[in-house]
Image (cartoon, rainbow over all chains, first blue to last red; front, side, top):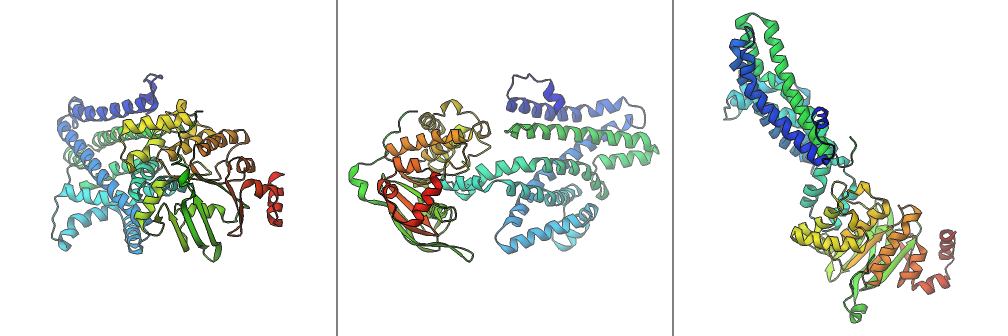
Length: 260
Length: 258
């Protein structure tokens, strides 16, 4: 993020600089996905002939990550509420969920949603959405801890001031507690999101045609592990770099007290 | 600083109790912290509550807008019984402003947004109008030049003046002050007390927990002395400070003034 901020005029406000930085990073990500196929096409074999596949795999990876990341945010928020609830069964449920998710491998969770869930419930999800469900539930458990810590970090006096002004509990949460706790939770949430992008590679195990799956296919048909895996890794690296760019800019946007 | 507009509703309403507290009790676990406090506060009155720390004076004040719940007796504010009913609590909180020792300005909002948030959310005042009214209030507390700053950019005295403006924006009938100058450096105490004096002169009903005896002497209509969860003495300031009969009050005043 520092790279983008450094070239922006110093006279701009912090909000403006970081808003522009977010836009630049998001735009950069879109452009990257757009030109990836063309760039890879000029590479030597076996990458050149698989350029289209790599590009579409990278796109599926981003879709998988963004979708399960957003659902995981909602799941994490609900689980954090559960953990902080005064109603004991809600606490038990949230604690049980977090305990199970954090104590079992993600691969088992993905297999469970894809293979075992249809035997228990009358729903059969395609591979992509099975992966979304498993990844969202997984990242949600980690998000819950981050969000809970953020909510607990909000000073009690802030809530008292809001309530004494006549704001309802819901307004107090929306206008005071949530924005303040979000700022505290953001670095952890971003870490979780970057992990999620990398973990989404496990979706290849149930046949989702994302980046890792493409890598596997090209490697096994070309018998050339080094160029294929290096290409796969570099694409992941560029994607995670864009993610940290965006999150760094959001952190600055919210950094009212100018710590950075 | 300009004068506040008059908040009083005429002299005839002066004798009508705005707040009635009868036999208030409060326990924290096994500790009995408020032991049967009864008193009334009148429209336009400035009451100053003093007492040693742990005497229950802040707890009592916080019960007047139910930041603490009383577990015995009853409190009626402007005809509304303050009980567990959320509608009653919200109705009372719209009428009762509170200023805290640690200011409690919303740290993620500008000074202007701190002042306008409650009118916009609770009274549904349009943003333009809320901003205009907030700027008037900020002018009255001498803070209009800082409207677009964040709380951390202000001194303690400035933050507290904004907190007073924030409470006034809800047009409360009574203002509670919980040790408003105790967290301030000495050179900033005066600027906050000056705002409070202007407010008192404008006819605002005020209940102030403080250690500022000068303020009590000069502004209070009545001084209330708390000890061990009870009101030990209440009297006009001349009488209270002039000839404190009670030995414990004399001892307390001796400690404070030294």
